[in-house]
Image (tube, rainbow, N blue to C red; front, side):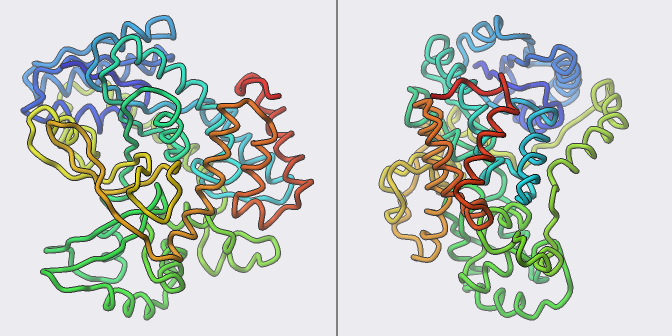
Length: 434
């Protein structure tokens, strides 16, 4: 069995995902192909993973590295699984562009990797690369599963599912940590807890939650309403208070998915709900500094070991290869799964994984207010995909004009001017538009 990791220069993430595979006995004899366009970072990941392989897997895996576009097909040849973790444009110049130009129009963001003007442009520069990758997969390993970790998850995964022949599922860890995060915030135990989550990526909903068979949502809501101190999850608790349900992804993310929180007319909301503006650029700078301190210890440590994490990839591969069922929250096309969301949408629902592959589970209707919130995000996602597929600039405008946060802050004319400025600033990072 061969697994190809695209974007393997993401060393910490490669450690988590591929380290999990090396720490899984059923996958011990795997061939791993590491692919990246940055030879130095790729070599760091290769060295790190060889140390883990030797220490936790008795050296049974074979790990090879491939650099540059001309070696991508060799990396993919014969793969059963392709894991995608690329970031097109990086922190500099593209992430800074996504934040700094909107600021000139008074449009502030927190993460800007999923929705909003930043999420739209991240998708537009990433989708051409994803489509190129899809063509190579269709030639080199047409039966492979593509496990996509790259954001914006719904736009990228949805485009791959609708416009390529590649078997694709989008994976995010927000489902795994959602219930535990909520229970910790209201000081409730997590043992014996079961839950059901569905919606769209980063805006999926904790639809029900029980402990030892008892519905604990009423007590959660009571304790949440009693919180008086400022904390890092205030937006999600307010969403739960108003709309009735807790949302999977963090408050800093959801603050920019809705029109209620980051508002020039009400600047006091930023402090009231503890919203970290410009959070993603700040994290990027911190991670760069941290890597200077820990990078050598991680990549040159011959005693390095790894324990399996909650990331889905290794569990999916193990379930398919051994036919031992496993349940995930996966991002898939809405083929009648959530009945009050559009069929073209990429939705996040429970999926059964076994020897037959990845099978999404029927959910039915979401509570109407939750479906309505999801649709506001889906509108922009679908138009972003339309822009990427057709090459029509007007659909970039449409995606931005229908984005909840952007449309709540900017006029039509300013939104169009902002898009034009971002297109110009991106230069060759974007294709030509007509």
